[in-house]
View 1 (tube, helix red, strand yellow):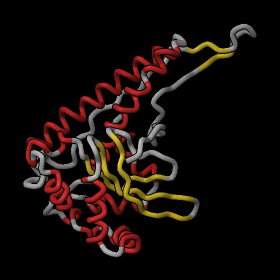
View 2 (cartoon, helix red, strand yellow):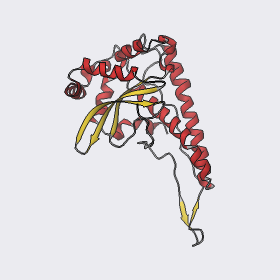
View 3 (tube, one colour):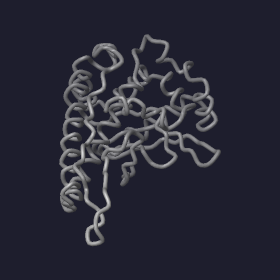
View 4 (cartoon, one colour):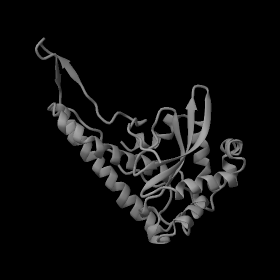
Length: 249
């Protein structure tokens, strides 16, 4: 598992700073700043649409309570930081970074997560909806079964809370696929990293239904992976992946 120390979010800047030239003694003056206000993105399906694999109770609590809390806390932290920048309160700005990283990460991760799920009966939930991605998966792991086993091992190897992601890693003109795990709410936002789909391994994502049966949750979530969305992220750009986040501002 890795820790991601930088939060380079591919959406509109979290803060907007303006400065005006003054005298030689005071060359800059920070004007009043406004922080963007993020909102909870709606689900693209009903709360019960992923049953029996993920219950309506879990989906409603997970989306309307847990995700909403990240959004609420992110907005509060950004507002306080904007005020601290205006008053040149550097200690407060520094003290807020952990809260911004954690809550912004929670907002990013969940916004991507909802979009990479789909009802099991839909065409989007079939891997045939992702021909280019599946071809690359086979080239990397040999076949879909081997890939799923590798992904499962990564997910079940997470200690505590975190996420598992299939990531497209771009380096120049070359690209490869990688399975990545992140701690707590650390998002996949590194340079050249494009999250294809993720699985939430926090207990609130499964415990009410699966109790301590994490392996069963991991097995069943394959039934509701949105392969169509995964394909779009794989063939698209990094900016395309984060368009949902831009729409939440």
